Image (cartoon, rainbow, N blue to C red; front, side, top):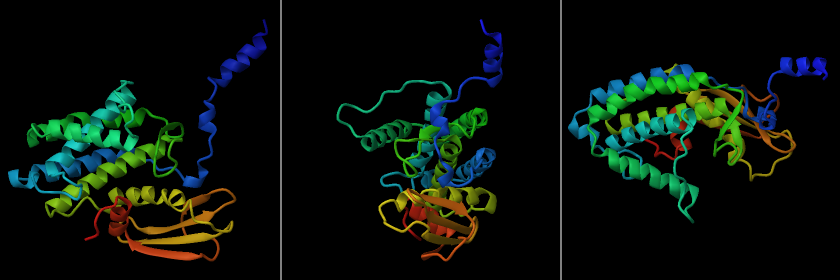
Length: 273
């Protein structure tokens, strides 16, 4: 028995999953949005506590969903993440012949319909009870490992956990803004809360431009004004495009300028004010 080799293997630790060696450098430097979930949730709960019965029934930009429905959808996301990611619960998947978008739409509608029987106070209580558990789940995950796919970045490919979590944070923040828009209550758009949302959405630009031909080195310069704004560059490499924070290092082929408020609405197919 070769104890020398055994000791060396033990010191090296468990082998890394080959998937964790996939190159995601094109998506730019990692974001750590985990500390922001309690802050975003506190803002959401604060505005929900101010609403009267009529406000909960106001329509939102989400087709067919009122404020109560969007809030229930956020609760559903909390439950789904805790059940699947933390607890490893194998939930039913699509029906035979059902597409994944169709399955997700049906699943969301079924939960929102069931939750229509729950009071606003119950929904607020669930956010407060489940939210800290979700925070603990995020804190337990290694940001540099690979997790769930992020469809607008690289569909069907495991994405870095940091991007998956940033996607979740951005979704919760957007749903809060949809609720605020519906009840004419501005807020939750301070620099600290919105900046990671804008940065996260701009990680989708390489995939969005995938069908456009361009010579290697071609750059797009993106300038975002308002809270959370800044400058980003997207550059064509040999086989893909890369996105990074900061101005391009060479002359850009195109300049895109828009406000942070416009960017998140366009990115989520929301109507511009």
